[in-house]
Image (cartoon, rainbow, N blue to C red; front, side):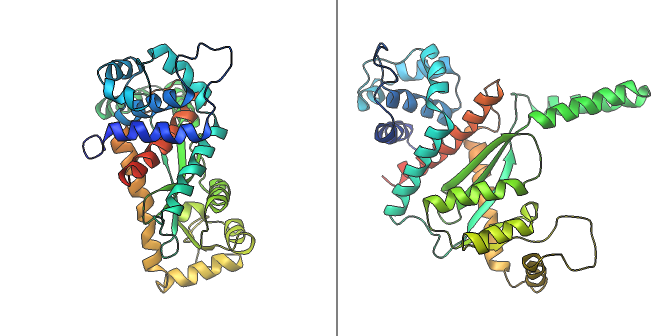
Length: 321
């Protein structure tokens, strides 16, 4: 993304989208040095390059033509961008921006949902900037301590691991498998089951665009998810059975039994193969925008994950201009 895409165009498109949805200023009594759309464009380019607020300020100071494109006389201070992050990236505003981007793609005929399925998957992100070597050494030290002493070390290691899992940022997305556009996103903390995320993702996506088919891996296997998709929303669901203990008995439930039968004879092999496209999108976001979050509090981490989703879509949109 940093080399194959134009950051100036991303900056301009982010400003254009924000202008269509956000008010000019947050309050009539504010200083009115910058509009909300201009600050959102600054946050988007910060996420695009994976910079700190201070380095983003330095980048914008060295890019006067970018500022002129969106009517800015000077670059905002790093503290201004830090404060704008909380105000601009509320979940309601993020979903409205997602609505707008999907609508623009649909009007341009860039979506492929008529001939390809929507794919759903989730991924976990890192809470801190730490090297893989450092993490590996920490795990080895924890194991060595647990083996030396009975009880206390083992309990402390398990408690620390449990705390890390409870705080792990998790992003679930639904994408158009042809264009790689993210149609819906669900953010939360904690490495739990994927199945509960299926309903909010599918409802979000169907509220934005017509979905004929959805594919997901076995982590989303649930009779309730099949019933929601097929009977309530009229979407054909393809999810392999994989939840529960291994058994030779047929799965319970009408749709899960049908899935087991169809996967056994490889009836949906070609369509289910499109699920790999959502893994491609997760890889794109992690490779281009980093797999680590810079925010420290749980709420800001959720907002940063939503910003990653928006920047990914903005880059795709800027490529079409």
